[in-house]
Image (tube, rainbow, N blue to C red; front, side, top):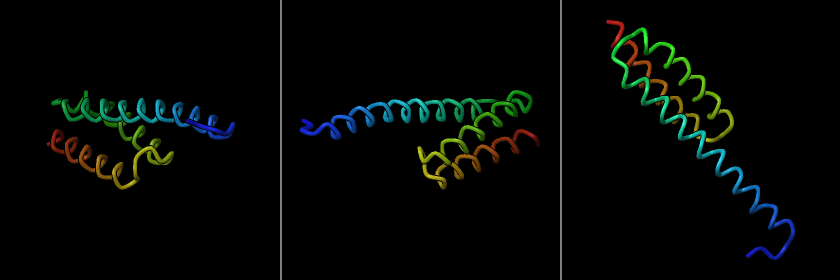
Length: 85
């Protein structure tokens, strides 16, 4: 248990940040699945744009590593290009 006022504040901050990070990563997974599940280029394109924008946003904020975000964007792009053929 925390013995100092600053340690108690850190516990509160950590809990708040954990919830924000958890929600953000959950949204990322949902958006990625939505793109990969689409079989039509017309429905995949807006979902792809939303997913890429979210991935960029959370990578900049450090919620996921930038290479992880880049890898996911690459896989989404490959899927989108396969639908275009």
